[in-house]
Length: 365
Image (cartoon, rainbow, N blue to C red; front, side):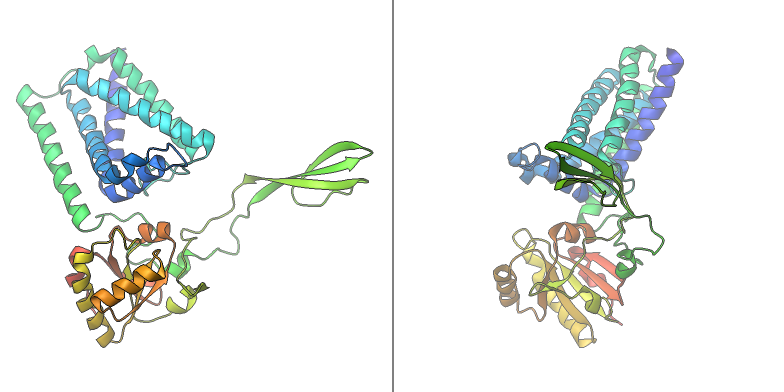
């Protein structure tokens, strides 16, 4: 039992630190995932939605701290109980997502590692087993440092987590795991290779044959049946290739202008996924930056999921010299974790990407 507890301790501690750190790198992204869980179509906990970011920060920092505390053997009873309660909560959420197909990605490892709902649930079951072992054998979790050293290690981890979290919230994630990272080409990210795997479907054809229902399953071909066709049910049995970027459009009057705009040699995008939530205090600076870019020969566009009335009001209030295009809100949240944020592109390749606090860092050749 002692050795089993030791293995579980190292495995759980390291996994919680890695998982927590990945989400700590992007707490805004994790808060978007929590908003999905809180939405009426899932858990119907809408009163938590305004507090999603605060909950996100608390959870990810706690996750890292529990991993550290487990490894150093600090406050063992509290640590093991907290780990158990946390994994039970995570297991419920991932099972709910998988069984009811509500949230297709739990966000367990942020954008670094994508897991299907059932993979996420399986991962949590494995973790639950290891944590139960720790719970049953907590007397074998002995400190590896003295009392003061344990406190210092835990406090240092807390200070580092808070400092790191504050930095990424006021700038952007230090490590960008998304397909819109600097250096990525959006057009290439939307391309499906010629030899990419195709999706495979089962088709359940239902016929009326001599007054009886007859179902024939094929993978595409219409069956030759001496009877009356009633309907067909389609089931995807194997997913095909999905490009990293698959929901990106830049629409004006319901016409997708993405192909044209992504060929611009000098393009500045101002992205504000929701103008009701955007930081309007920075639009005076946005005005300065965009005017400067226009003078340098840049095509400047705004991208938002807000309606024309909201975008027109913003343009008028701050005398913005560019038009807003419509893009899906989820896509905009994925592109940049800032509302507003800015991207500089050269023929579809992202050259610069900044938080609104770093607009001064943009350079225009």
